[in-house]
Each structure stands twice: as C-alpha cells, then as structure tokens.
Image (cartoon, rainbow, N blue to C red):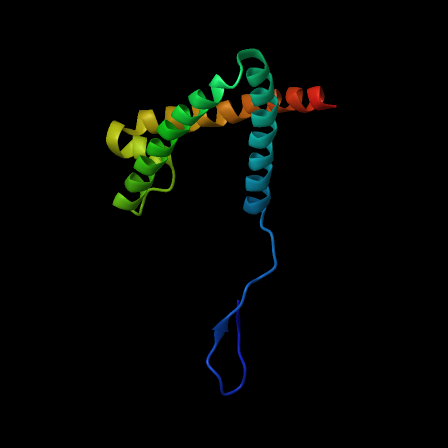
Length: 121
C-alpha cells in the first residue's frame, strides 16, 4: 500500500495485516519448536551432551541442502516448490509423488505434534 501526499512523491508504507499464509507459517514454526524442545530434552537426558555435536553435524548438512535448494530456485524463476524441481529434472510422476508424500508427512507430523502437546500438559 502506498500513501500519497499532494505534491509529493509516493512513499511505500507497511500494511498491518496477516494473511492465511502468515498464520500457517507461524503454526508450522510452533509445531517445529514444540517437537524440537520435547525431543531434544529427552535425547540429551538419555545420551548426554555429546548429542549436541550430532545436532551440529546434522544442522550443517541441512544448511547445505537448503543452500542447494535456493540455488535451484534461482536457476529457474518458474519453480515454486521442490516438487517443481523434481518435475523438471525427474519427470511429472516424481513431482506428483513428492508433492503428495510431502502432504502426507505433514499430516503425520500434526498427529505427532498433538501427542507431544498432550505430553506437555
């Protein structure tokens, strides 16, 4: 939204709105945080602090995968998700399978998160 003042150049202004997408992303972040704290506490209690080194190594690999996906995204601006990457490089069947398996994984994660929240209560 741009505000205008008579005789002056338009200057950009922020909108104070939340769309459905913003709320969904906040919910996903909350779900990830809940599982992370519950899972991390139990694992650290069982194995000790050496698991933090393992978390750092896994985090490094995840970082490189995210960087690679970012490079793929910028290589073709028509890509909207990683299912599009699979469709472009592996074919439409791979994109279909990846899209639906991603949906299924989030469906299972919702159930798992409900169990973890029940454990907190």
